[in-house]
Length: 257
Image 1 (cartoon, rainbow, N blue to C red):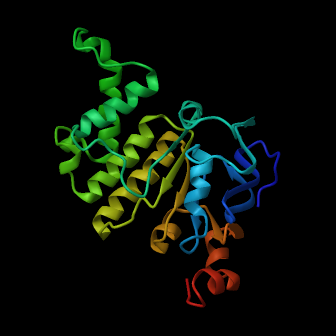
Image 2: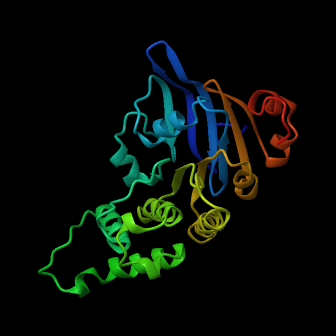
């Protein structure tokens, strides 16, 4: 585990805890997320993975502990202010506007980030920078040819791609992805993973990914964190996690990773 205080630490949690009544979903988690790495968080259902992401992104309030992002305490900041500081996320269930086109979904995300709104009176030149950025993101994601298709009419895999692309449109430093490959066939999965890897390389985004698909986890991760009953039980490189007897016993019930 990385030591608090390293200059390349992007996000640090100190004693991070979330309780729902008597149930402790996240239990005093101390973690440091390093810059420009892909970290996957795995664990059985109910391990606290999504709650942990919700705490980091501001969608759930903290019961106790602290969240430090780029050296600043953001524990009490609302979600929209965390987005402005460079934290974005996707969701298990795609969070898109189904009645807007693919293009408009990305356009809206970019305009929101810039604090601007669309004005039909203004000339297209006034939005040239936005249009250029929309095109770039859609080309990177492979969705440019579907730019005029309503988002609700895209395939499930394309909707997952769009959801990640919307998260990228906020120009994040840290991007949190909740099961980006869930429900995808092998071809769709490859497209999503390629997009994540390419944006990781090209845009220098730090990713934290929750994922149940172990093929995805071992293909993309620099580091794997294992959670169980709200606590971190293992933290290391993929080969270390793959050969961990504790992870086998707790996460897989004795099955091989």
